[in-house]
Image (cartoon, rainbow, N blue to C red; front, side, top):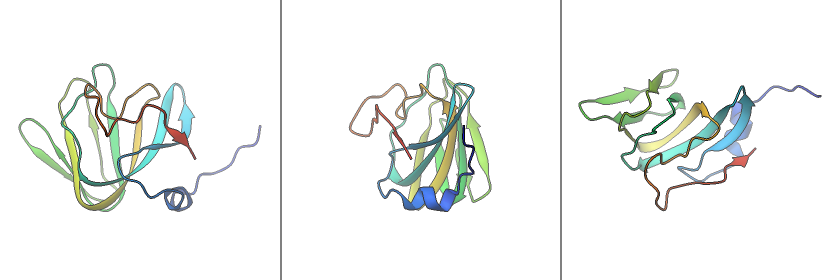
Length: 121
């Protein structure tokens, strides 16, 4: 089996759409995903999965029930399962997500932003 490194800038260059995570790696039942975010997402939670948001480029805000977090490049937050959250980005932000492979991007909400089958790039 060939093992190769992942160059994040090349992966981000491979897509343009927002709110549509792409799988770039898998390990131990977890997926490493990249996404470009811009604008507002839906308030949601994940019943069974924790979710890690790691900002690569730009600025991400995550609205919680009682506070809003601001994440800058090189910062991450883990949103525990069951916690309502709504990511938003006034300008495009590039993030890495780390979560179980079964995690649905919109969690307990199903709408036009839901991505059921993620692309692997």
